[in-house]
Image (cartoon, rainbow, N blue to C red; front, side, top):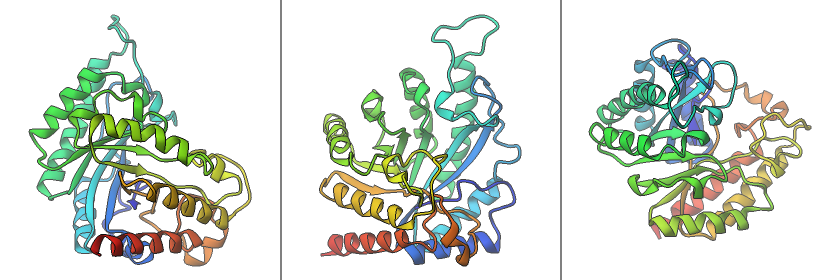
Length: 309
C-alpha cells in the first residue's frame, strides 16, 4: 500500500499517523509500503523546488514513518513526489527543448529536482529503505533521457538499494531509459475491461528490457462509474463500494495471470484516517472500512501462501 501521500508538515510522527499505519497492515495484509509525500514548485514552469519549506513533511517525519513501517515488518520504498502549488498536474511540468534566453530551462529545473531527489536518497540510504523511487508520473520529462540517466547515476552514488521510476499509465513504452533502473514501475489505473490489452502492451516492454515490474500505483475510487476510468478522481457519481471491490478483484485476477507482475503499491492509505463509521459515505481511493480492503487482504494472503508453498 502507498501510505501518507496527502500528509502535510505536522501530520506525521504522531499517534494518529501511527494508528493509521498499524491499521493499514492489519486491514490489508500488505508487506510493503511506498511512503509518499510531496514538495511543491509554484507552477508547471517554475524551476525551483523548495522541499525544505512547508507544507512538505520534515525530514524527521520522513524518518519516523520509515522507522514505524519497519517496526511493523514492512519493507519500504521511499517515494518523494513533486507537485505544482497552483494545482497543475505534475505530468505537465515542461520547458522548451532548446534553451532560450529569459525563459525557464530544463537545466535549471533538473538542477533543483536533482537536489530534491538526492536529499531523500541520502535519507533512504541512512534509514535502510528497501527501494527508492526517483520520480512519479512526470510525462513531459520522460523524453529528457540524458538528464534522467545522469540523475540515476548520481542517486547510485548515494543510495545502494534498488531504484525505480513510476511512469504514468499508458507511458510504459515511451520511457527509453529503463535499462538504467533496477525495476520498471507504472501507475496501473486501467479501465476494468481493458486489463488484458494493456498488460499485453506492458509485457512487451518488460521483455524488451528484462527488468522486474510492479505497479507503483493502482486503485479505484469507491464511486459509481470509476471502474471505467479509475484515474479520474474528479468523476462524479454515487458512493459505490461494490464497484471498487469488483475493480480490485478483476485487477488481481488479470495481473495474477502474468507472472512478471511483481506486485502493487496500491493507492492509497491516508496518514490520518477518517472515522470508521464514516467509511460508508466515503467515495475516494481509500479502502479503509470498505469491501475492497477484504479483497486486498484475501489476495495478498493467497499470494503469500503461494510464495511460501
